[in-house]
Each structure stands twice: as structure tokens, then as C-alpha cells.
Length: 202
Image (cartoon, rainbow, N blue to C red; front, side, top):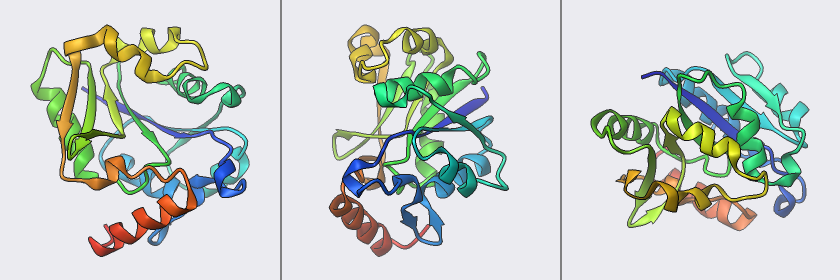
């Protein structure tokens, strides 16, 4: 099963004073470029970056990579609006990896773990990585989830669909603290970056 990737980078980064989280440093790369390169090297196709207010900066940062950059005109309505903008350009026969840019320190092996879980579990349609019992990102959806995602209100949280799928939601334990390292503030970013460095830049 071919898997597409949606890289979510449509927010205004208000807690960073307007500096786009997509351009935060992750070793030698920025967050968005690191994530994109992991997806491309893993054979995900297509790889789509959804942008909002920082469209020009992010598109410039991704130059030279086989990444389609989609501007979500209604990004301000909520994260789901940006997800839906990406979904509309994903081929309908693809499963989808959703990777928000505020989780930039996820290890490449975690993507493979999610795909392996998908390949071995024919019942589940929504795969959530967990670290020490906490759910995180990126998540993997089977293509069958797509209509439900597109039917959500633009301001409705994605998690509001979880009760509908019940036992079809699979939580996949991983040894990767990056899945729960949400860099939503400068302090959280610095803490996650320092931990990542102690583990060895990879």
C-alpha cells in the first residue's frame, strides 16, 4: 500500500513571536526540511506540505525537494482546515501519514513501525504512536478514514472522530520520545532539542 504524507505547517506560531516553527533548527536542517527528507527517503508518495501565513518562507525552505506545497487559505479556522486542504490533493487510493511540524524530533524508525503495524493489522484504520503510554504524532490513517476527515467542521478537532472508530484505533508503542515532544513553546522546543542531542543527532 502506497502511503502519502501530509506535513502540517499552517499555523501562525504565535507563541514563537510569529517565527515559523517549520524553520526551527533540528541539527543541520530546519524542522520542515528534516521531516520532508525522512518522508521522501522512506518512499512516501506524494509528500505534501500544507502552509498558511508562512507559505512563502516554507516553500522557499523546501526548494529542491520533491514536495508539493499547498497553501490552506482557511488555515486560521483550525488545524483540521489545514489537514483537509492537504487531503484534497492526496490520491484517493493512498493511506496517509499526518506529521505536524511541531513534532520535528520523531525518529525515522517510528514511521516504519507505524507502517509495519498497518501492514499486519487489517482491522485497524487509525494508528497512533505512543511513548510511555502517551499518544503522539505522526499518525497514520488508512484511506478509508478520508471521507470522515473531510466531513469534519474546519474547527473540529481530529480526535473527535476517535470514538466513532473505537476498536479500529490502534495505539502503537514506540521507543521514541519524539512522538510526544510537542514544541508548542520556545521552552518546549529547547527541552526537546536538548534531549534529542543527547541521544545523538539522527
